[in-house]
Length: 146
Image (cartoon, rainbow, N blue to C red):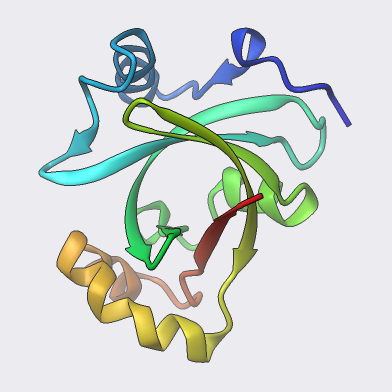
């Protein structure tokens, strides 16, 4: 396992994600905090093969004190790489606006997902279309502060 150093986290190779992550971080969580009107967080996670720390920007919902993220990848047939990383290394680092914290990532069971899915669709309606585009069940992950 690689030691966490926020300054050396690799940002997503997707240019729009990298740009948003940099703006979010450089503004101390006051800019680039939403995507098409939906709230976003920064997720620092370890790569499932390398263990290297990486950063992505994700839309989130809430369930009480916990944050919920959706491994949709736009309805692609495969899970996003960050989801595979969470399965291998469930301890993550999160930034929501100006706040940073360590969290434990845990995929929801189908029953738990069914309970929160309507609320997530209110946060970002395109998730419904993404689920229709793919045969895989799109995972929802709970981030709980540790």
